Amino acid sequence: MEGMTQQTAPVDVDAGPLGGDVSFLLARANAVAGAAASAALKAFDLKVRSYAVLALAGSDARMNQREIAEYLRLDPSQVVALVDDLQKRGLAAREPDTRDRRTNVVTSTTEGESLLAEARTAVAEAEHRAQAPLTRIERDMLSHLLRRVAFDS
Amino acid sequence: MEGMTQQTAPVDVDAGPLGGDVSFLLARANAVAGAAASAALKAFDLKVRSYAVLALAGSDARMNQREIAEYLRLDPSQVVALVDDLQKRGLAAREPDTRDRRTNVVTSTTEGESLLAEARTAVAEAEHRAQAPLTRIERDMLSHLLRRVAFDS
DNA sequence: TATTGTTATACTCTATAACTATA
DNA sequence: TATAGTTATAGAGTATAACAATA
Image (cartoon, chains in turn brown, green, cyan, blue):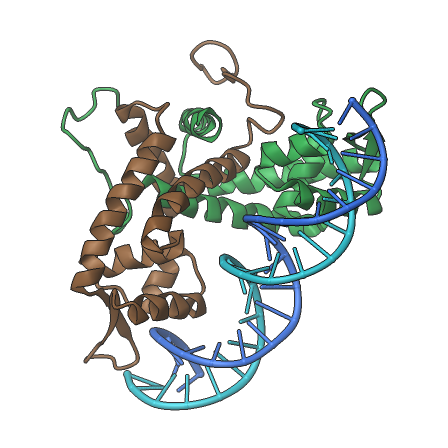
């Protein structure tokens, strides 16, 4: 084909009938990684979604709920319940924006910060274990490629 | 490109507060790709899951329901409903295994084959569009890396 | 005794629409 | 008129346990 390296398609270790389908591989890899993260978060009474919201609340991005919804690809109405839960547990807070009183900037409390730090470590470990077959450079490469698929379209 | 940046972490185009988290990128990329595939499959009255089962039924792997469940990371009880639906629509069939009468090999009918062919084309187009920012080589690279994360752990 | 397929059930997640308060 | 947040609700997806037939 197009001047390529050697043959037409390398198609390494075939991984079954759908092994060439990127959407399927994405779904399965996501399921694997999600299960690992979910197990790691159980100790903190967090789910993947609430962890993500807590991480955004604890970042310096100062996102409002709509921005969180877009970033996580959730419906705004789902973010309400997630923030409610974190707020009830004293981990996050809704900070009213003085310039636009319709919006709430979601921030994290001191407790939220420290729980996030612990949870983040646990997730990173689980992630590392789930991606054990990859070298550091390969993981960076994967991260780079995924970022473009996840955000450029 | 292989010259690499010899730094500790390249961390290219930052994609927000979670842009360095592979699990998050996996989730978001999967959401993007899934939405594209889902939209493409609507015309065939298929969902991502039923499409996947139909694709396996139409392959030469001759999988039974438990194998399908493992491959798609679904519970066996969920596969029952999916196969039921495809069978009712005349797209797939349960072929009893003479050597082990407990198992059903899920196969596709002629109708199923032709619907699968059309659906596969539509999905491939949607997939291609969703991965437009990537070159052919990058897509192969992504595919290769994902395959290892999805199956080696 | 273990496994395949099945049923039933409860739970979570998701999608949609409507409502309020602000802009 | 449009947007951020909220509420309510129905539907889709998921997890679990139990059961029958077969190994």
